[in-house]
Amino acid sequence: MTQSPLPSLLAVFAHPDDEALVAGGVLAQHAAAGARTAVVTTTWAPETRRAAELADALRLLGAGKPRMLGYADLRVAESAPGRARLCDVPQEEVVEQLVAHIRAVRPQVIVTHDASGSGHPDHVRTHEVVREAALAAGIEGAHPTAGRPWKAGAVYGASHPRSESGALDALLASVGKRLRTVPDDMAHVAVDVRAWLDRKTAAIMAHRSETERARSLPGLLARLPAPERDAIVATEYFTRLDAGYLPGPDRLEVLTV
Image (cartoon, rainbow, N blue to C red; front, top):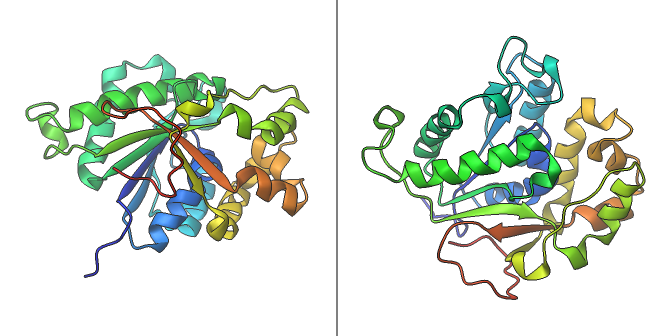
């Protein structure tokens, strides 16, 4: 079997559609190169409409079947009827589940939300538990029932560098929302995903319950002319989260370990 030139990739995000919006390009890129890809979503239950939409989006991106932790979205009670909200459960409970997924997938690279979490508490909690789980997954004796230890080579957070985010910022401001950005030197990786825009855009549009909403980002993008939409989503940026990275102005073409 020919080895993929790109690393295996696990994406962990809070809500269905996060994966397509901020990492759909790299997921499609890695899958097209033969790398193993998978997505864990920390909120929404498997029996909901958005779970079915997530399955459609992941199929388009080549990222396998949904892996859903099934906690409730902080702001949407019907996201997981009868289940606790992600932000209300003990962090260790979520960490142990993520450790099991990391050890099962055995990714070389993990991507998640950055520390700002775009201002959404579910994103921030997901960022926190991913960082803890990525460390714990590699420790012998930690979470012994969650599989054999595995240490990913790198952990990245999806980010929006300040100088590159004007069009997206303006789009969100049009509905009274604010974009959380990072200084340019904190966006350690920039990935040009124009070659995979068809798949990324189709995955975003697969989240139909979100594109139907006037104020959601998928809805805003769906109503833009294609050239304007493409300019906003054609590059994906990531901040290196794990120790050992020396910050600098590098713009890498692919995620590396």
